[in-house]
Image 1: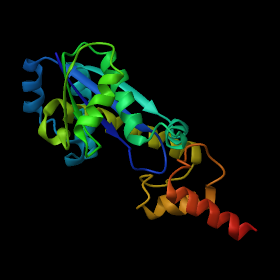
Image 2 (image 1 turned 60 degrees about the vertical axis):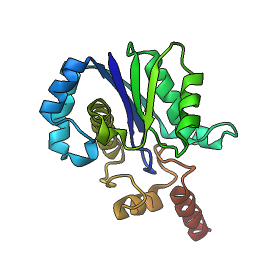
Image 3 (image 1 turned 180 degrees about the horizontal axis):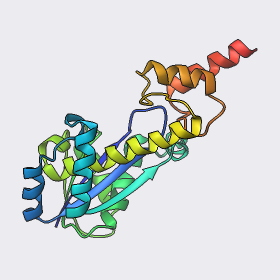
Length: 210
């Protein structure tokens, strides 16, 4: 058994960070390749949804959804940051899997340090492959990226229903997201309050109010 781990939603100021592990055997990986499984960013939303269903049918899938509150707590901690949160969550997913080899898409420039942090939190022996852009290099990591992305997108749609407003992608580069936060920064619990975008907009709104 081989597994891939990937995230979706690392950069947004709205909504959760989703991490997924997909595991299967080498024979099934060939089937995933034939289906066109690759980095989720290279696929249309419709194609991702279709492949999401196929991956779930063919592979074992494990997912952890990290709330904005949990992300903020990690960034406010003197011993944690976003990379370590991602690494620790990867370890939790790996501990729940049966894969003997796991490929991780690494967010850090220091592969060795990141890999060692993951290993420190493992409860079993695993061969780790830690690389940049692993989702485009390895089909199994691409599969994990599709699972994470589809779930993240679905979570964002749920939040739009809660807000009764289409705030866009949730990324700081999205004008709809910025406008929404500016008008609603103190109304919802799905903002990442440690993000500089949120801090600037909330402080500016407080200044305008005063």
